[in-house]
Image (tube, rainbow, N blue to C red; front, side, top):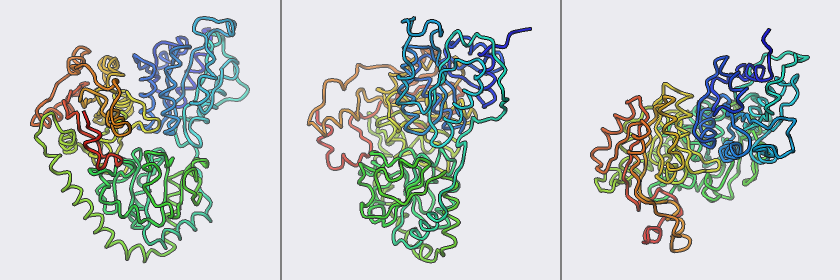
Length: 570
């Protein structure tokens, strides 16, 4: 009879929790062999940090936990950055780490490292699997830790020798699938819900700000219903983009720190700044999401819905609605119906007109740059051409820095729940391409387009080979301006001059793509944008478009208003 090993039991348990793909590079080998034997696909990455980003995106799109496998030591250290992003953004993943054999522990074995200490700041829960009778227990506890409460990454440490040991039948059997999130949906206190509903019903100028937690909770449809029934204006944070249909009557679009001269909510600032009751949903109230805590009035009354009690009141003293965002929104909507919404309905006609006028002013203001024929290409022109081709089922991802802000500013969410993935948890550079790959793996039927700067793309060139080998057809648009644009502008703004670590040597990104087996094309003429984008989006192949853009262009960061000459000083 074939021996059933710890690796076999671990693989079966992962499959029970819905794991169909492990982002892996062979190690832990015994576990990966066992997983492949039962039909779990090993997605062979080139770098561990990119694998963590792929797993993050896979979870964001699928609302299922993802799995990454890494070798001990230096490979494990490369997981810290993507886990930190996932931790901040409340995205679960299980990280399967090989360890040295237990008999060699604390003897300076090859690549031995204290992984528990390494992951202390980026993991919700870390355990070493060293008892052959507790394998399923440990994996189930990992799933519960990752997917319950505020979701986040967890770590399972597997000594090489333990994986090859014969498994011991556990005392109690396990059969549940715990791989989804939110795993447990909890409701806020009904008394607090009733009070919050009365505050909103009685407010002169209520405002809702939706964060990324609305996506995590799958609460977008509930939010749309609240918005419609209670006639509430809704703005979003950067990570909250896509939680609302930005064309709906009472939608303000992304506000956050991008209400600069060409920002989507620029002409809605009077509404935002006059709010007397602000409902925050699934938001960390972080610096960028609140424009350094200056976006909304300090004297307003605040209500905060969140699954994490420590986030409620962190920056704004608020009425506490602790619980799952979807259930909380549904309960609040029901309570608002009971209060009588005559005041809100009476104000809605003028509110609708005000928002529509703000949109008209915004479109008129940005129309010239969106139609610009200048070269190098205006980024706004490229985004306008892309926006015209997008459908509600398309997924757009962005790298950090300006790429995220261009996407949240100039592409329109066409339905509640449309996904725009921007790495704003910790905002690490180099996230764009692997985010797109993870999203495509989670939603193979969707078209996925990634927008990256040339600085960010250089972090992950090698994953083009992964996309080609693993047949992951995503379109990547490189905003090639030859330097670190956001860094240059920030340094000029703060210090009057940049450091020497700004400019790059010229790189032919299209040639890099072709060398890896992907399609690659360079665009210097704006008249070529639309046809090139259309072909790439429908090609079924990994494609890189090297877009030569204006090096002085800047996204609508509010801080830059009135300082064009200063930030672009030579």
